[in-house]
Length: 431
Image 1 (cartoon, one colour):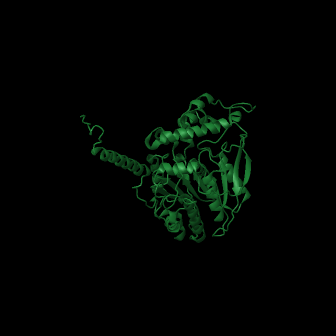
Image 2 (cartoon, rainbow, N blue to C red):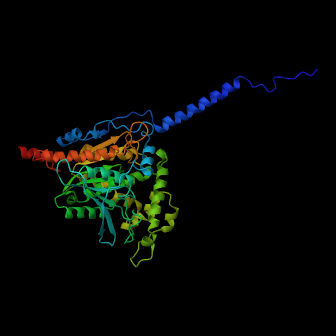
């Protein structure tokens, strides 16, 4: 009689337990990675502020709650600077509005044509003043971007006129009229827009707003010439890097994936430049600059594009010279109007070493407040409970809240405290 071996196909009772343990370990690993990547354990806090103790700054901190209250991003993803940045760049704002404006065309001396969109207020201003926000968007951006439309709609309803610069060459349906496009620090088009507003609305006061690259341009514009600060109530700069020369070294690092972001922005710049290849590289009797289009095709970083194309629009002999002369770090100390500088500690594009510039400036100049949030990414600053963000961001509310506070200060300030007059001269008048 044959005896059947019954334990040949028997599974050891320890194996299911081992598989279950592996599954639990895998789940635990995924959760750990998610917690680390989403930064879920990071606390929420009010912005870290650097400023001098002056009557104006005390009033602003009291009257603009976004400066002192806790900024709370969406719980599940809002503490990741990468997700904040990506959602701003790809998804825009929730239910982005479409404010109605009029496009203006301004011929420049070199043959270029600057364009900007003008949006009249749709609500009453709380102080009854005529205030125009002159707005400079980020790199390659314009008035049709989601974050610009959302902010303009919000500012209009609060009684502000808005003028938004369209960077030269950024609008796909507007052809260049000269062999030149926008660069990192050229203030010519912004100056033309501001000049138009001052001539057309002689009674208006200006509030200057710059986002990212636009922050560099507006601070450089104000610091280039003291007359540029006339009729300017205040200035807000959000998420700029202050010094292109110092930033270029950090932009080649893989820390916080900055090298990857650099590649993506370079690819976008290539598309903008190549969309205007006819105006920039040939086909017109206008004398063209010797632009290296061959190096453009192989470029993998903004620095390579700046060196082969962008610096040549204004005749800079080297990349170092271009970055030195176009960065606001060499001009911002000349700005004497109230200046709010805003950055995020988890901005993947702006290295923490660059933040010593606004922090040092706020320590030296009484007109400067530097606000640094823990979270927000690059121009993200979404707010929300758990998953879905609110249509308005903390950034939108901060800029309008700061503007409202400045208007209230102008209405009720002591006669001697005029912007940008110093407190020492005020004391002299009182004595």
